[in-house]
Image 1 (cartoon, helix red, strand yellow):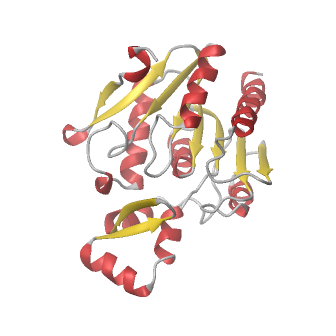
Image 2 (cartoon, one colour):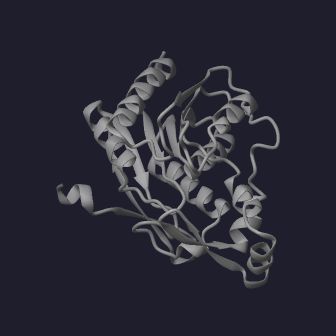
Image 3 (cartoon, rainbow, N blue to C red):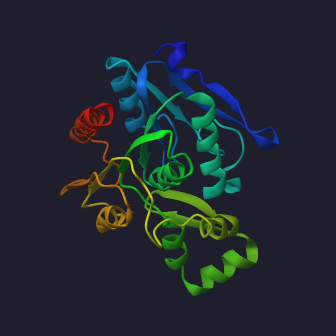
Length: 253
């Protein structure tokens, strides 16, 4: 990789924080990748999309939320509201014209938040194992003793598979202010939802639940029977590329 690929640019945020990002110029509508909980902008899907956009001369943006990857701050400082604010600042300050948002896992929740806040800017959505409202799932997945400990101490160390991270009380409480699955999701843009049926983090019916709640007319759910949560295999990435091709023909028409 060249220095252009590895050295990020920086977007200043409140409190002296700054977000690391990579932006490629190209045609509109642009593509913005929104990563997942505790992941960063150098993952397989983000890098695939950057290359795909370069090959198709499409504008592209990837970035790290507060406390993720190369951005400043600690993971424990983050909440859905704060990370949505980071994404909103990135859209407002680093992109021009209509954008297609691609949200992976938690990024799927942030994607929906952005579409509701900037309906005039968002031309289409692609969810990859989208996980709206998942802070509630974390909370209700805790034992009563762990819930009490989290509320008393303000944070709780948790383990999920090979990953360990700290859940904070602020994250749980803030998440309740950003829930989108309690009623209709007022969207007009086309929506594509890719969901693995062997996903151990997001139950596959979640994709259908999102589709049922959105008010958009053009919604397509694609279930991948042997797909996992990451959907990062070569065939998954090829499917993502085909999904983008198809969505762009709809958006540009």
